[in-house]
Image (cartoon, rainbow, N blue to C red; front, side, top):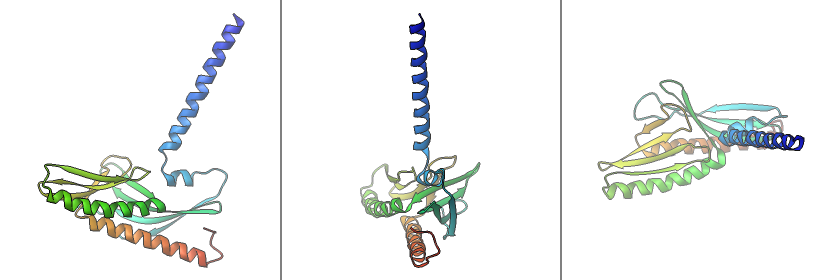
Length: 195
């Protein structure tokens, strides 16, 4: 009897440990790259923001954009941030620099596809790109025209419509240029943390 109760206790303990590990893994998986990098333990973490031009939306107030340099210990990473005040909360998205470069390539491909999709006169088409962190952008075609949008990772009212793809492209280009400027300044200044 004693062996049976010990076996049951050990089984329940291993199930509990397994579930706790799954919960911890799920929590880490739901973090954005910026959240994961900025929440490393045992290091000093510094945030430096650089404002960019806002993104004019089809309806409502513009979305605010900026570059955030995050220094954690001896390592630096750069993120393009987009924020907009929604009806209930602030909606935001972050795109790590390498993901921004991929997003720029995807946007170029989507622009070409949008022209073809409008020309083919479908009843409805949607085409989009999603970053690793869940930020989406793309277009839908209906009634012979395309409508572009941004969709943030989460939150209420998290989809915002834009007049054209050029607006998104201009913002991505400005972000890339600013990140490269910051990296070059950091490389020239020996007092700034190593990249």
